[in-house]
Length: 212
Image 1: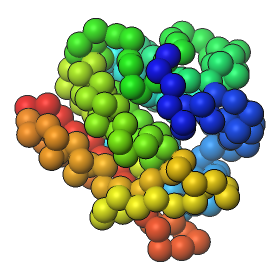
Image 2: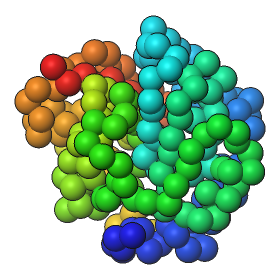
Image 3: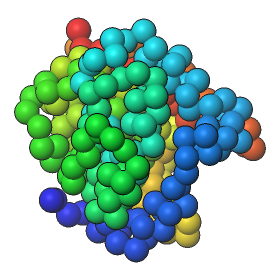
Image 4: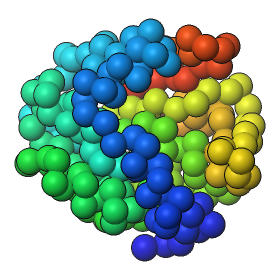
């Protein structure tokens, strides 16, 4: 697996602590989303992909303990895959899931053939990729997606590094939807919505893009 400064941090104790902080049940995850946004993640997902066939093949890039995939499984989706860089998180994911395929890999080298998935998504993952490496990650996501790219990421009109738990060089806000659209002219926006935090004026952006 390709190593960057960020990957090296996330595969060690720093990443394990993140996994422990976020090792929630689906109900607890939805409660956290209500606390943060006033809406559950379940509701967000239904708003964006409830009309899709339940047998489409879906990949989450950076799935951690697979809670987002479990949420989709609860919605009825059956062909679910995840890649994750942390062995610690993968072990937890495999212990808490059934019929979800989780393998070790990073966004910089997705181990699947072109157009293997109908939908590829990230949730709070692009924000942790160094802007210098981001084009490569986006190219990989685009490459393995046959039709849809779905994202939920911290939003800023332009690239903006912010300190993450007292650490630099680990978190960047951006307009990730625009980065996709600028890089791949055949993508079109199916749906986009910004979710404001309940405690401050920051926003996260959910977007669903389709290859034309």
